[in-house]
Image 1 (cartoon, rainbow, N blue to C red):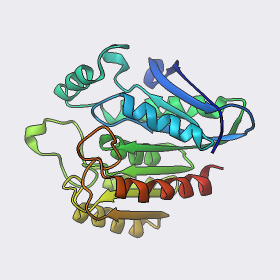
Image 2 (spheres, helix red, strand yellow):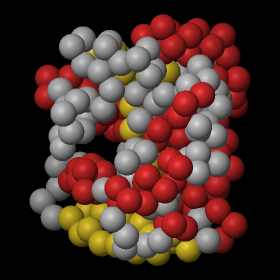
Image 3 (cartoon, rainbow, N blue to C red):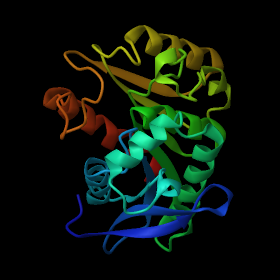
Image 4 (tube, helix red, strand yellow):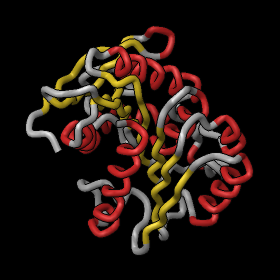
Length: 246
């Protein structure tokens, strides 16, 4: 843990050079640091995700959370913007990869960067964390209950997301997966299918499934929050990033 951090809103270049708002938190003093791109959940670039970004800085990482909904308007209510994005079917995968690539480039350009960078994402961001790791050269990736990796989304959700399990052959780094046993998206059956695909591709990964927890068990500001599961999972996160991003 570090005693002092700095957190602020900055601007970075995303997909096709588009300007993105991003929340940046970093330790003060010392270094060099590994970098972590925090990919927010479908409800958007909100207070809970910014808290997670600061938490990584507390633990000695430069952490950057790009507002993936910047194109819909910077400074607007996250819930309203998220509803608009859902109505459009979500973010296209190519745009997401370009935005994460911009965030990774920013982190690796920092004077105190050690050159290593990884991703962590929650809900839709968990899927996107895996997608980024299969599309970019990363040092670590964490998927927190990312849905629609194996199965198609229900038709009534009208999402652009499609399964990406076929991409795991291109996974560029070790993967940590954190899931809830009571989750239905992804269900334990889906995460087992993903594990088999990773094994068949010869990729380094570790999955943990927590009992008495469903979707969004990390989200302290939501009814799905499960303190016991989250408190078991956080040390696994610190151990994982410590091994691959230090």
